[in-house]
Amino acid sequence: MKYVYLLIFLIPIVLLAQNDLLSEISSEVEEDYKSAAFKGLKIVNFESTKMVSANEMYFVVSHRFGSIETGFKDFFGLDQAVTRLNLIYGISDGINIGVSRSSFRKIYESSLKMRLIREKKGGFPFTVVSSNNILINTSLDDQILPGLKFKNRLGYTMQLLLSKKFNKDFSLQLMPTFFHDNYVDIDEQHNSQYVIGIGGRHKLTKRWSINLDYGLHMNRAEYSPFVNPLSIGFDLETGGHVFQLHFTNAQPMNTNGFLGQATGDWGKGDIFFGFNLSRVF
Image (cartoon, rainbow, N blue to C red; front, top):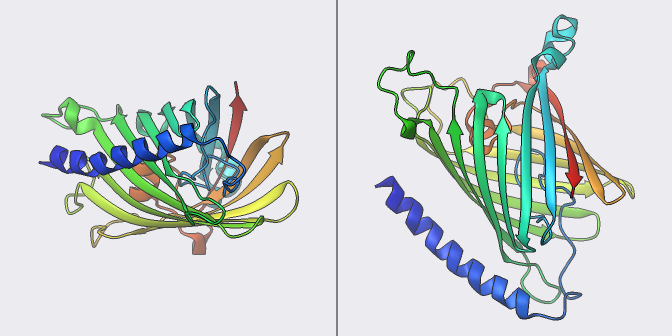
């Protein structure tokens, strides 16, 4: 039955995408569209509405170190790094595909990102993007989990990203999110989970901006040890590229991970430092 729900969710997204993408192809006046609300492909943890341009390829190396609360014992988390390698290709200006591998739970992931509507001066007031992912958790051990099947390793994410650029310095984004893990660590936790995300960017100087995003989990298990992800980041624009530095209470970088398995406590200094480094081909 869950696959029927997924199909119902995707059909209107695909239809909207086709209509808007065709209108973009036929449009010859690009100057009416507002520039991107965000400079990086991610706000901090959440995807932004920025797209990879047609025929461009991004290789993104992301590091998320351990908790800085450990101090010199683990050199403020540097001994517990998690790495994610992500390759993203622009089929067109409005359709991106990607594949990634994360050392957190040895996760492989594929992604599809489609721009449905673009914010326009005097026109539609928001940019709307659909972001969809399928992941495989290869760390699950069938000797520890008898009866483990391949389908138990799978997870899915579906998001709508709605951003608005209020002026040249300030942008906001709303991210209603559905994600599903066929295997969850906590018995009381539903496999299907819902999150409302919010994020923003404020430009500080010509090259620097401060970013923030937060995810409000709507149906977390009552006694779950996990918490809502809160992240602060700084973007540095260098020659058309963006170098991102961030602090967050979630070490996982896959969407299902940081939304469902954040463990840090900002009040206790239990936070994780990390960065994203992109190379365009």
